Image (cartoon, rainbow, N blue to C red; front, side, top):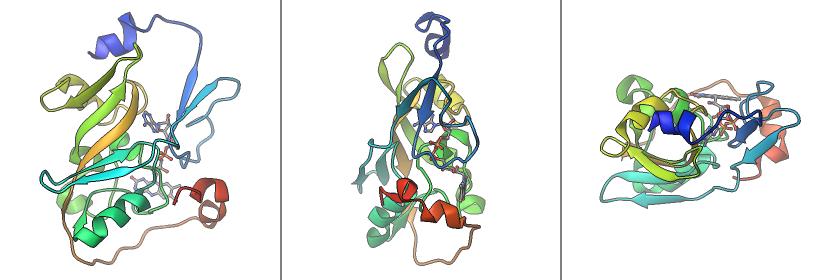
Length: 181
Ligand SMILES: Cc1cc2nc3c(=O)[nH]c(=O)nc-3n(C[C@H](O)[C@H](O)[C@H](O)COP(=O)(O)OP(=O)(O)OC[C@H]3O[C@@H](n4cnc5c(N)ncnc54)[C@H](O)[C@@H]3O)c2cc1C
């Protein structure tokens, strides 16, 4: 599966593509590159809570605040960014530190399924039973193995809690960055 994503179905071409989630990662060249095509996922929004399976389905272009607002009234939470303004996409692909990290582990360990578009344009699910090698590799694989379009995250019961995180004024002030929530 990984070879398919990397090699056979994706002949080595010079075309470069950038993938942008919510665009919150402030490093130059991280979610955008000059003079190339940027695939912008910021309209892949929406959440759906599956109460029976304790899973929330999350569009990869959203922000964590939308996820938390959906879970909070149900007395539920999930591992996610410590700032609700942050983009959903990259934490489950890169590790991810949440307020619940010491109890629940990295954000990526709480993903039960990734929906991924491979370089072949095939859309696959990747979880413990289906494309399981890709599932392991995506937990830290970043944008190297495909474009994740939906994340299915484990939820857990959670009452009120208090936590602090460093915040950036410019991050909050930017209407472009905060428009989706
Ligand atoms: C103020 C601030 C607070 C932060 N707090 C935390 C924190 O508490 N915990 C923590 O772990 N991190 C934290 N971060 C880092 C955080 O992980 C990112 O800023 C943010 O969540 C990135 O998500 P995004 O969707 O905006 O990614 P983008 O900035 O859009 O993209 C980042 C990278 O991920 C790739 N990518 C994004 N989405 C996808 C996708 N769907 N499929 C494939 N590749 C993709 C992009 O190509 C790019 O390389 C913080 C950052 C900031 C600026």
